[in-house]
Image (tube, rainbow, N blue to C red; front, side, top):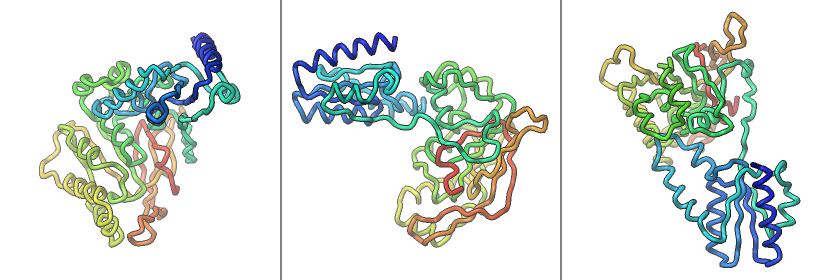
Length: 350
């Protein structure tokens, strides 16, 4: 399949060289690639654009990175599809730069080559025990429930424990937490991958901890995303009142940033629900001012995760300059869990 695709691609490319139009190659079919193609096609009537991708399908993170219950975000695919249907634009899948074709070859065939692809792997966390079974990058889980071919065989353990810990407090972390906690009867109405839905239907996870090294004022999610997860039916929200106490620096940050203020207000309201939790209700715990220190192994030395050790942090930095950084205090606590999911920025400043 890859060889056939490359031969068709090469034959078309070499044949087109003789007519000498302005020919541009874009490597990567995610939003950046399609936006670039769209601008080029509009700006130059004689330009021809070829978009290459190592996957057989286009659209990158719009297809594999957006939560399945956010169809409105994927509407942009319609715009990209119109670009791909332009007679001066072609898409070629199953073409891997470096193995299917080299950059040198591309530069010989085109007037310009645009490299429009991002990182496809995650950096090491740099924390003891990160190789234990049960620890995954959040990106892998997102690709798993979106049906990305690289993670179709991923088998996250959703049965051995009722608790999952997510390191990071951005929108991706909220997406993963929402998919883990949202009723599968609702997820079934989305475009979630069938294998992921089946696994979630048998999931034992009832508690999710969202861990951030800084406070609620510095959390990186948007108010819309936060409001959505707080609105999940029969979800018990846990927030320590002490974490909501603000400093003068926090007040300045909120004064200068309307989104931060709104996020803080939503969290403050959620911390005082005014109702008693129901029995067997699912729980979402917001854990602020903590950073991961060590991953714990089961006593049987099976190589499987037993929990995560967190270090309490405090913020230090210039008031109002948004440079408050988390500093460890030497005070630790453990959370028992069967899964840890982490974002690439969750151990920053560790």
